[in-house]
Length: 288
Image 1: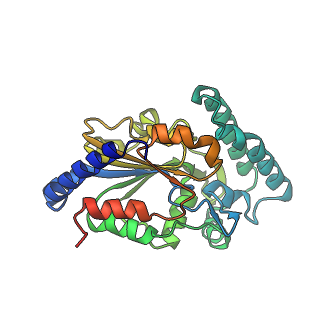
Image 2: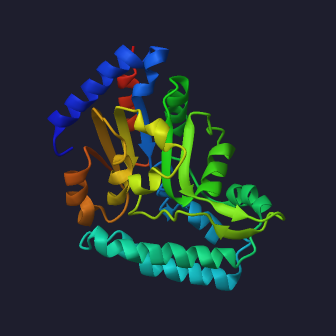
């Protein structure tokens, strides 16, 4: 934490709102959690190996041809260093991210992916949610606090990961890149708008059906793992208190300064949701 006093003030304000309002059903509408998915709710790595993102689950699946897999890997190796480069501005990165996502989605459409393949892809993948994820989802569900997952990944895959983990509760709303299948269940395109790491903001969110629900929230906890995730709450009007928590997973020494300047709390190489759960527990008055 660069500014512990600020963090303490925000958490105290959230707790006051929580104990005064969140326990009262009519006032539960004051709080929401906005979170990224890949490498925020999912693990970055396990036993020294990278865990797959929702895109990687598709890229590495058996339905992708050897040639397709190689092309997708080449795109990753070229564009990922650009995505996390602390010396490039977001303005420089944005068109390159559009380029990356567009090329990757076009390649995936060529692979004749079936909707019925998705569950098996997820089951056979090495994706892992962070330790403590059940407590996180259950706390929010129990208190009827909306969780908005704003992801530049693949919504169909993301939802299946949550479904198989048995944490896809009714309070969860997802904004992401969704595959569009034809009448035979064959992938024909990705739906608009295209969401990448650096356009996760109100320009995208206000076009979704979830925007109205989110716009009524005044207390926000934001979870992310990139600088682009910080804009996820930009479109929320009348925010009174916002606490931002950033997971710094990769190139820690190079990126620490920017993360400390941007996020209220930075968690370095932490594969758990323990800190988030502790804060939620305190805010909701569940610590006895």
